[in-house]
Amino acid sequence: MASVQRIMATAGELVRKFAHYSDMALAQPVIVTRNGRPRNVLLSIEEYDRLRSRDQQAIIAADTPERFLADIEVLAARDGA
Image 1 (cartoon, rainbow, N blue to C red):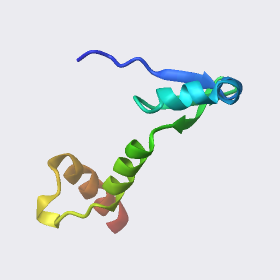
Image 2 (cartoon, helix red, strand yellow):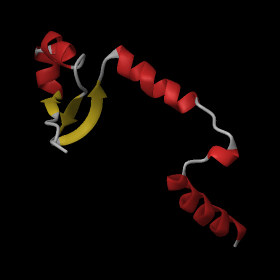
Image 3 (tube, rainbow, N blue to C red):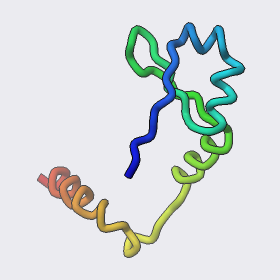
Image 4 (spheres, one colour):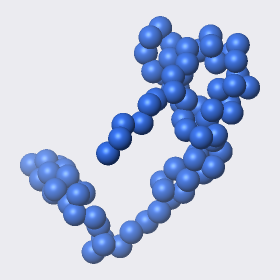
């Protein structure tokens, strides 16, 4: 799998070149840094809506993906202790 190059901009760069980074965010998220640390992400409305819709999805307990079952069991055991 090829690694994806991250687009990063300082907060100051984002302010000075907002139109440029706004256009770039249509293709992939732009990570905004402050004091050298990632702080925010600029992304397209389509990607935002996609992520929000995933938060709203519900599944039947029997359909819980295997990758979550171990975590759920650990949490249940910890809460029951």
